[in-house]
Length: 173
Image (tube, rainbow, N blue to C red; front, top):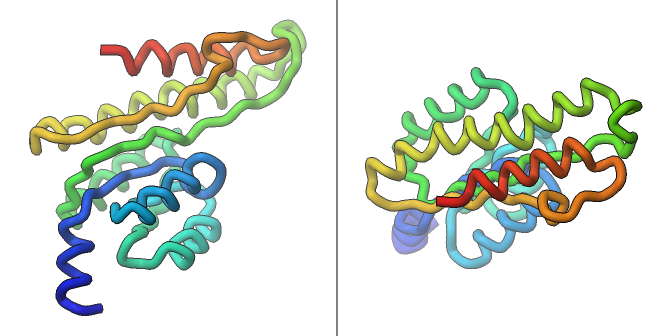
């Protein structure tokens, strides 16, 4: 890599994307890199984010295993960010999931708990972990991906819709 290429990469904006191994997260990583950003792609599925890194380039796409539902995993990620002196310009809270379509009286409690842990608690945890860095550097943005299900419920989407309604409310000033 030439000095010019290195300087352009080191001076480009940095986005952290959770759940970057597939779907919207992967698409965001691809789009941001295509537009000159560096990306820290995070996910639980190691091979998928390594494949994404190979596709986008190691200099532009940094990967880090991260389980947003595990406080120690988030702590390790924050330590990694600080050790590397990364200054995030953008956090995209994308990690999320929907489980089951059963009515409330038949739904699996574990599915509900997993959705709450991932779609609500983890989103708040990541926001709280990254936001102080942005405040300190006096710049940065956070995008919390929700779902139309947070506004318009559907049969069996009871807890999923509720978690996405939380996302909508949480992002309001």
